[in-house]
Length: 52
Image (tube, rainbow, N blue to C red; front, side, top):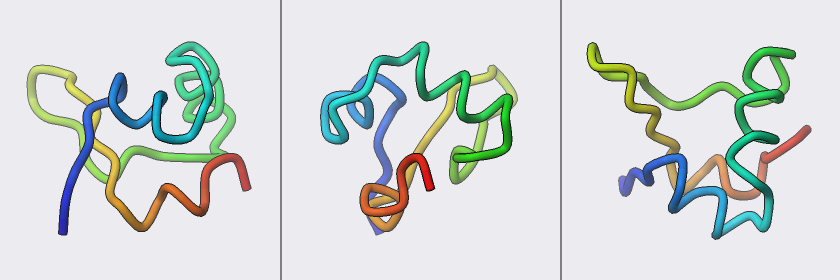
């Protein structure tokens, strides 16, 4: 499975990084995982789920 940084993912789904963070805070779209350093990673499968 491939993982994308929040910047890469935002370009793939056509949404801003701020929108993705807002959706995370609202519980609409959570990153696949967040590193100890706070880096967010999204999976290929989440591309079709964004914002749902």
